[in-house]
Image (cartoon, rainbow, N blue to C red; front, top):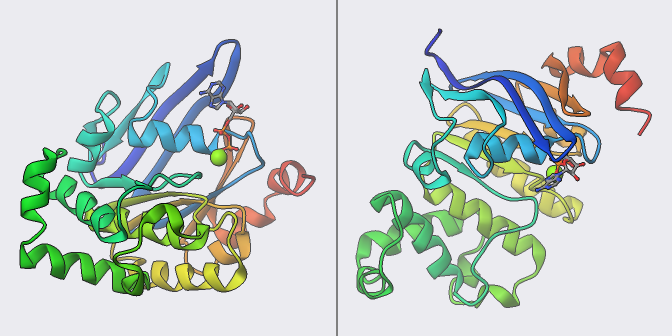
Length: 251
Ligand SMILES: Nc1ncnc2c1ncn2[C@@H]1O[C@H](COP(=O)(O)OP(=O)(O)O)[C@@H](O)[C@H]1O
Ligand SMILES: [Mg+2]
């Protein structure tokens, strides 16, 4: 096996009862590559990301990172291996402040686990934390909201916060599930701008419907349909693939 693949799946199958959500999926991406996955709703994209990030176990097949079999590792262990993700529906702590959310994500990465709240509160006073959290908040233009309670923020800010939290874990591999969903054009462009800055600096795997935004920064594009990857290659090559045209553009 070639160990250079930062992520690889072999024969990944996932069933929900009688329904096969993923069918024998082989996939690979290289270190520092940016790959987009598109496909109709229900194609299995989120299920695939859940398997890559450890939220679901496959019924068959394996997931590898740099040659290591990570199929059965928990999400927390994968974060320790530097694979971090965001969710289609945002996962942030609504009752904590913007600062506290990012600080928690930073700690999770530093300690490899959650800290007891008491230790967490004491550690928050460290200048290093202030500096790091400020850095991520600036990147995602959230610094003016630092003390806001997250529950009060609009969706666009929450999505940027979730990205800031994923970045605070200092991942090698960033896995993003529809980061543009529900956002306006300007907000999308701001996020695309940030992702472009990190393209080829981190490995980025992104599921998105907005193909024209994806092709601005991804190296390769995969199309998933009915639980299978039906095409995978350079953006134009993939979009011109006859099966893609048949399966995808009809929706
Ligand atoms: N936890 C689950 N239990 C049962 N069915 C599921 C579950 N998660 C996803 N599915 C089904 O698997 C299929 C693929 O879902 P999903 O991976 O969310 O698709 P996508 O992200 O491409 O829209 C859908 O038909 C969905 O209803
Ligand atoms: Mg989905």
